[in-house]
Amino acid sequence: MLKAHLLTTGTEITSGEVINSNAAWLATRLEDLGLRVYSHLSVRDQKNEILRALDHLADADVLILTGGLGPTSDDVTRAVVTEWANVPLEFDPAVWAALEASYREKGLTLREAHRHQCYFPKGSERLANPVGTACGFSLHRKKQLVFVLPGPPRELEGMWNQEVMTRLKPLLIREPRHWIRWTCLGAPESEVAEIVEPLIRGRDLEVGYRAQVPYVKVKVFADPI
Image (cartoon, rainbow, N blue to C red; front, side, top):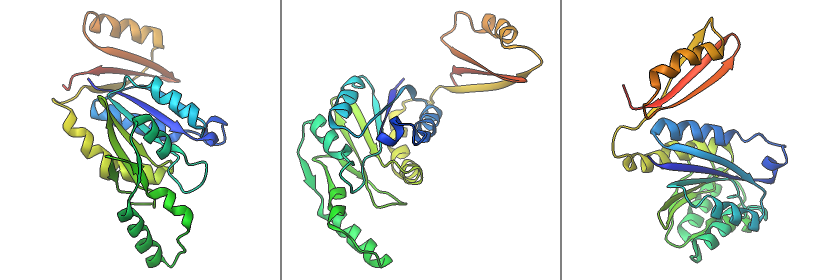
């Protein structure tokens, strides 16, 4: 089973200014595909903090970063990932040409700062952004598959649906395990557990309970029925 980690960069996240909805959204879809998400980690837009986080998450099969791909000085993700991967940062003229065409078509002014969005780690694969202007990218580092996605939720979701999901599905050799869920009413969490635990004892299953009055939510991570 593939192990996944999620890393969000953004001082607005760590300061509490913005809720990290991207992590919840991505985790749900990764687990629906059969990958296990082991952690969510958020760090500020600071080079050394991002580098430490990347090293800390180096045991993942799949690592997904979100945020920091825009044109401003605090958008440092692409440069930090490039340094971490120990490859050069290269300008992509095709991405710049596409930006020029898009802005011209919309009657907008393309600024020199937008060149920042056209640099990528050497050898990485571009991920098209169907909603915004910042391309994402993917690369392999040792045995890890790394995806770097934009922070705005609409852009991230569009890129996931169009670019990321199709790249992950071939990695799943068989029909994946997934969460089987049901809702109980009329008994407290402890009593529900007394019924469920004997049924799964000795099996390679992961179980979780969540009380949500007046219900108890039960989930088991298991092979497809």
